[in-house]
Image (tube, rainbow, N blue to C red; front, side, top):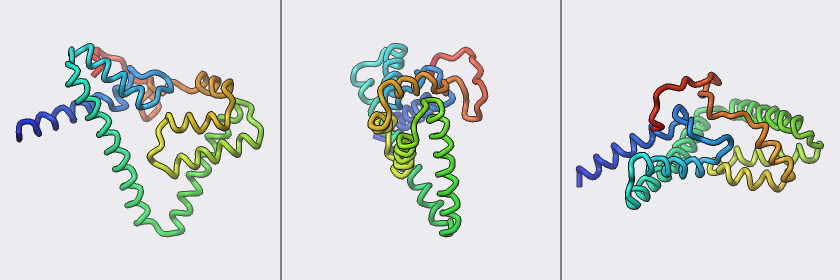
Length: 180
């Protein structure tokens, strides 16, 4: 039993490292996490010749890890909120709102949105911030209620390829990497 727990822990550590942003070169521009997860499982299946049972176990591990990360992020936010004063929380909330409004303004300029659509888009983005369980698929679904199909397509086309940059915005070096 102990050996299985150790094996599971090693696999989880290995898989967590393989889906980190530093190894995102295999991702498609704008692909939702769920799609990237599936692409990762497919890639591992091909490269490691996984059995169907292993494939299912790995998929379950990755999905559980994602849920755990979301829960941890929510817990950290709550802990930070408990330390901040009401005034500090209000300042932080105002900063977040300004950041969202700048983001929406860039999108609105690119898509030439009217003020009504811009207001609706801001509401969707603020709603997303209030619920840490939102997925990119859910965001896409909500955006489709505000933007036309042509606007969504243009947004996808103009979105920067974040997979080719690291978190600091610098181009990642491409080395001899097996994709893990």
